Amino acid sequence: MNKIQRAFSHGKAFIPFITCGDPSLDVTEQLVYAMEEAGADLIELGIPFSDPTAEGPVIQEANIRALSGGATTDRIFDMVKRIRQNSQIPMVFMTYANVVFSYGAERFIQSASELGMDGLILPDVPLEEKGEFEEICRKYDISLISMIAPTSQERISQIAAQAEGFVYCVSSLGVTGVRSEITTDIASMIQLVKQTKDIPCAVGFGISSPEQARQMAACSDGAIVGSAIVRICGQHGEDCVPYVKEYVKRMKDAVRLA
Image 1 (cartoon, rainbow, N blue to C red):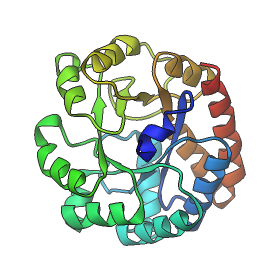
Image 2 (cartoon, rainbow, N blue to C red):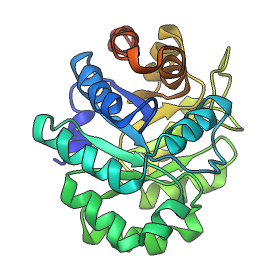
Image 3 (tube, rainbow, N blue to C red):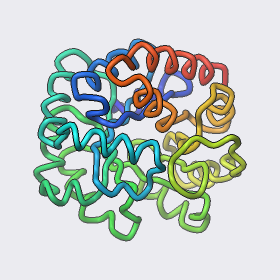
């Protein structure tokens, strides 16, 4: 059992996302420890990019803050190296193909693997273009996480057949961001995945309240929350750690009830 599978092995998983370097890389490191203590099962670390097409305004602004604060891929790798001396929580990078390409795809994935990262999510890489990343990820034992969206009905089984680690189910169309309600039929999307492959499915995009997290976890294997946490980082800056910790604890408690 790899670390990603282990994240889903004790009940429903809660998966927080943060943007590395917002408000600073030192705070990002502290956030990882705090979120693990609060019950997070797996953590998504966003590597900032100047044109994050899948992101809403909250995460876009965090990307801008992180980049202007000097968060580079190499500095983020150094931070992960420090984290791995203190924590073995499952972690995946979420970033854009351009970030990986400009670093050198093999160099990026090999470095991530050597640092002890467990997976990679590239929201702008469709099924048809996964091949070049997939081969390198397999070589270095990094799970390339697939995303399925409400529009990809006939593609869901195709995507599921190649999926590794877990499947990221996008709960709503459009960009990331907090939603007042989530109306997508998540259960049927997940059913299609499970018919094709026995792999954990976690739901993200739009979840912000404990009630939404509980609802989404009830019909899946876990809930992913990004914008609501990134918003707390934006509001509290350098002092955000206890606020994020308390929020993650509430969300994890809600997911446990699913």
